[in-house]
Amino acid sequence: MSDRRSGSLRSRQVGRLAPVRRTSTVDLIADTIRTAIVDGALPPGAPLGEAEIAYQLGVSRGPLREAMQRLCAEGLLVIPRRRGMAVRTMTAEDVHDIHWLRARIETELGRRFLDRPGEERKAILKDLSTELKRMQKALKADDARGLGDAYLDFHRVLGAAGSSTRMERMVRTLLIETRLCTFSMYEHFEIHRDLAEEHAAVFEALHEGRGDRFAELMEAHLRQEVGRLLAEPEAAREDVTGRLLAETPDEPQPLDRLDLPEGA
Amino acid sequence: MSDRRSGSLRSRQVGRLAPVRRTSTVDLIADTIRTAIVDGALPPGAPLGEAEIAYQLGVSRGPLREAMQRLCAEGLLVIPRRRGMAVRTMTAEDVHDIHWLRARIETELGRRFLDRPGEERKAILKDLSTELKRMQKALKADDARGLGDAYLDFHRVLGAAGSSTRMERMVRTLLIETRLCTFSMYEHFEIHRDLAEEHAAVFEALHEGRGDRFAELMEAHLRQEVGRLLAEPEAAREDVTGRLLAETPDEPQPLDRLDLPEGA
DNA sequence: TGCTGTAGGTTTGTCGACAATCCGATGATT
DNA sequence: AATCATCGGATTGTCGACAAACCTACAGCA
Image 1 (cartoon, rainbow over the protein chains, first blue to last red):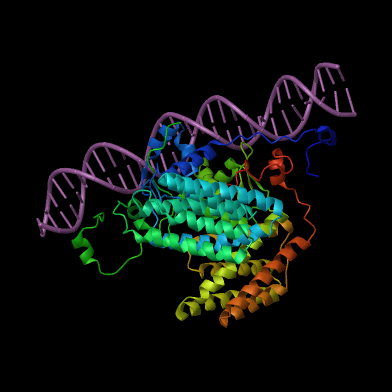
Image 2 (cartoon, rainbow over the protein chains, first blue to last red):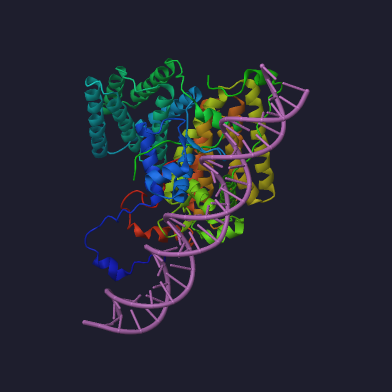
């Protein structure tokens, strides 16, 4: 009915080819900015002049603005009217909200993970243990950045383990927001030695197939995380976002201003 | 430190005024399209010519495209490269995913609701009962549309009851996606007489403060919902989205090039 | 001294136009 | 008869430009 491929064409199909992956400019820009945020190249509150960024990325303002709208919908940017865009600055309240939500979601992911066939579980466990090793290695090397990145990837793998498109999307976004929390609260990366142990325990629970224990540990881990984030006296950094958003009281819109990414 | 408002100015501040809420054009457009989707004016698969829509809304293509990117990030639109935009068509898989996710989230909302002070609970219960009455009224009048709208609003109120910004946003988006499921599966609205009873029961559980019973009933309700949506033989409607996405053979990679980027 | 009003410079929001690409159909070829 | 090639129409992606709005600073006035 709505299948355009003629029968003869399909019958000749021999091997299965993956479609060519062409990505739109908007996608490219959004990915670049997203990466820059995760890397800390665009810290929270950084003002983002459109002209400047567009020039650096080698695109015009049109596609750039489109990409920004997408990041705004993801909650990573704030865009007050006629006041420029900025990377969102997370508040203590955001830290609580994000981690509470992550707890709800990630414990559920564990349950879903355990419902999957053994074959798949095995592959996922392998990926998780890879990240775990990265964490431990980074810890030994006092590599705060590497530790943080492995942390993100560990949870990202977990996010994919639930085999729910939407949930994975959510987890990915929440993780970037988590990183923004770190940047918003600390001036620099910090090493937390407990991190690796907590994840090792979580991993172990999954490995043993103990769903409730996993949920418990994950919940505890995220609670710890909140404590670590908020323990530090709030960084005395210029909170541009706060000023920009003064216009919208409680629950504003995303979008705002970034600073310098790398050239095209 | 970073407060621009001078001390004297603040000291004179008497009453706290809510900031004027001016909304940007992009917001306006996005809201309009979102509403049109909920109302069924833009059914799933409907091709959205930029020029046409921009003309109808009285704006140029620039702001329109920006708004579309935001809706795309919310998962309501599909934007394949150079092939036009279209309202997303939900599949049976989506129905399962959405409702499973809703179950996880909304049962949690019940728990959060019960943790709130009695005063607030009361106000929320009142709002819920209002929607409940709307449902019953619509049912008696055989008003399928009214029934569906009250349904959405009931759950929307619930979404706000968890006092979590992010969760509320998620619920709102998931509800629109739910509506898209209805439109994708049925040709028209259908009346489901059980709906009011199920919600009455859910409401009652909340009213009595029985969190676990609420969770049970909500879970059951959403399961029923899936059954109702998938019971109907899939509507033989022109699936434009499918055609647009034909570029990706059968099931190569999980929606990537069609940009269902992460978000909300 | 402190607040109000005006001017300048800069950035955003919006629009119109151009070129590249894609869809569909028609006609050529084996 | 089926496949390939070409063409025309239509639409998208991108860009540059203009006007309005905003921020900063400075001067005027109680």
